[in-house]
Length: 357
Image (tube, rainbow, N blue to C red; front, top):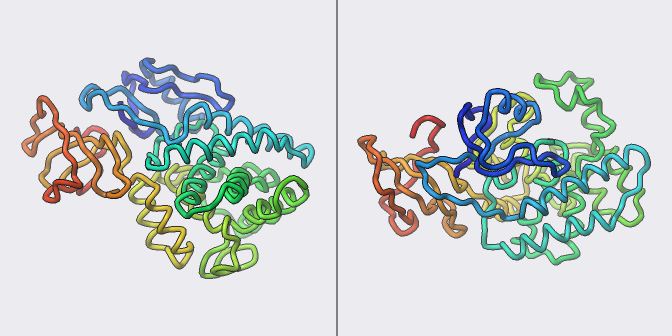
C-alpha cells in the first residue's frame, strides 16, 4: 500500500484504505476498484490523495499518528460547532474539549512518530479537514516545544477555530482559483478580526483562543495583518498555528494551486524562517514532519528506485527504504531493505513521479 495524489490515480487501481466523508460515512471501502466515475467524484469532494494497493512495494503498512476514529470525530465536532456559530455564538465546549484531549493523548502516546503527509490528508471536506490538520500539526509541534497540557488545550482549540471568521466571507472568494482583486483581498483579510470577535464572546474559551484567530496571519517580520505585529508581539500559540496553517494549505493544492510535496513545503518554510515565521517554531516543526512519508517512491544517488518503509525522527532525510529496482531498470527480486542512516554512501536524490517505477 502506498499514497498516490488524486491527480495521478487511474481507473483500475485498488483502494488500499477506506475513504471517509466529513460525517464519518464510508465513501469507498478498502478493496474497491476505482473507476473514472469514482475518481471524478473524489476530486469533486476535494480529496487530495489516497492509499492504493500496490503489489510492487509489498505489504507496506502506514501507521497513523492520530487514529482515523479520532480524526473523524474531531472533524464532526468542528463542523457542527461551525454550523452552530453561524446561528448563535455558542459552542458545546464538552465535545470540543474531548476532541482536543483525544488528539493530545494520541500524539503523546505516539510522540516518537513523524507526521506522514497523507496520514492527515484523506479529508473530503477542506474547511473542516484543514482545521483538524492544523490542530494536529500545531499540537505535535507544541509537544516537542515542551508545552504543558493546559497550553496544549488552548492551542488545540485555537487551531481548530483559527479560520472561524471565514463564515462571514463569501464562498466565491474562498474558492477563487485566480488572484483576488484588491477589494476581495480586503474582504478576505477581515476574517481574522471577525473570528476574534466571535471567539472572545464565548466565555468558556480562553481569550488566547480568540487571539490565535486574530493573529495567525501576522508575520514574524511585521509584514502580516491585521495589526502588523512582529516577533514576540505575536501570540505564542498563533506563531505555531501560522506555520501549521501554511504547511497544510501548500501541501493540499487547493484553489487551483499546485500541490507541493512535504519536502518542498518544509524547504519553503525553512527559507522564510525569521521572515514570516518564528525560527524557534520552525526548528521544532520541521522535526515533526516526514520529509519522505511512508509509501513515497524515491530515486537514490545510485539510480536505484525504492519505496520509503519507515521514517526516522532523528534522521529525517535518511529513512528506511525498500529497494525495488536496480540502476539498469530491472526489478529486484526479492526486494530488500536498507537503513540510509547506517549506509551513508546512499541517499535520496528525488521523489519519483507516478509511472516512473
